[in-house]
Length: 433
Image 1 (cartoon, rainbow, N blue to C red):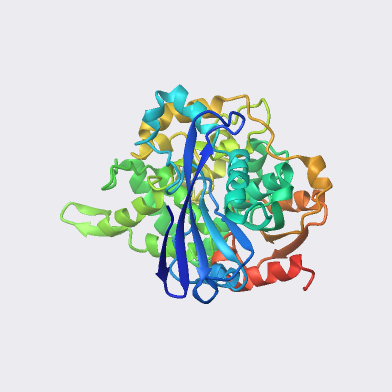
Image 2 (image 1 turned 60 degrees about the vertical axis):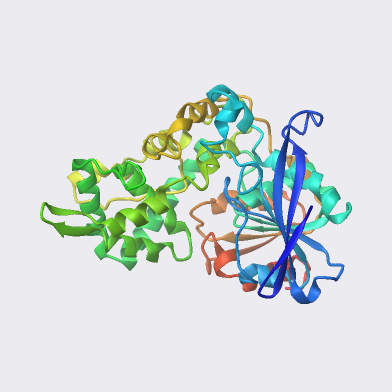
């Protein structure tokens, strides 16, 4: 049964689908997928082509927007849009500390989560496309990890695609997680340096907070243990369009004077826990490094190991001298499963995933080299989350792909640039620009 309802300028319809947990065993266990259909109110009864939106992540449900904001408003001018909660996210059989124990212990949970990567997501899309479009190929917009999925789509099932639009999400086809993070930490350092150039007062504020955390045991109201490494990870915001400003406002409100002396303010702690907690998207932490697993090498907590190769990120060393405290971001570390109450019960599961040696390839270079699907990719100059050099190298291997390389936006340009970004990409893929 489908349910339709209205928001300003749009008609929404809840759609639910049943798909196999393991597409290689279609007669086995099934899971439920949820997607929200969106169409402009004045086009609700028209026969429109479909656009499927794949959210970034991994581990995030599709956008919960109101009306026709940003890129969605542009898409609704000519498409009926399907916002898919990828498996394990949103309303699609969610996977988290509350539900995963239904699978059994950590070993069973880890085995289950091997079915939540891009290859399974693509096969989900193909299973539901028949029901949604009657089998007609659709346009797919993939943001960030959604672009990784779309690259897998081009590798596994290009016949399902009318057009492919990738924003900030062209992956390396062969880089191990170690290669990804060796490229990432220098980018992160550049973003931190740029932040301190914009807000020089934040350098001393960050050092003061870090020093406090090195000498005090701080537990946030939700039970999150705020270590100095956790504080540094707030730098993940620096990869977004307004992230440098949000981090600045967080730091300026950090301390309050009390009868016992200065301590971290309630306002700072409340905002920090909202930025740090993985309660709303635990899959991001659980399977983040597995999206780079494609061979017999384990990911083995890659970001944590590679970080040790960059001693400038060591907070204690920075504070012992006069070096600025460096934030981190776009990396998952084992200590997060000790600090975050939403992740603590899943630490052993995460360890087992990090140790796996049976990851299968997600991309088919030969098929991509023979691609005949119209495809375009926005590549953001010095993107903090996805290495620009990796993206450009991949772009050169996909036949017919057209790129738009820009420094006008950060990684979330499809959100901050909205209609303008999608307009440019659609014109480019149609050879109108």
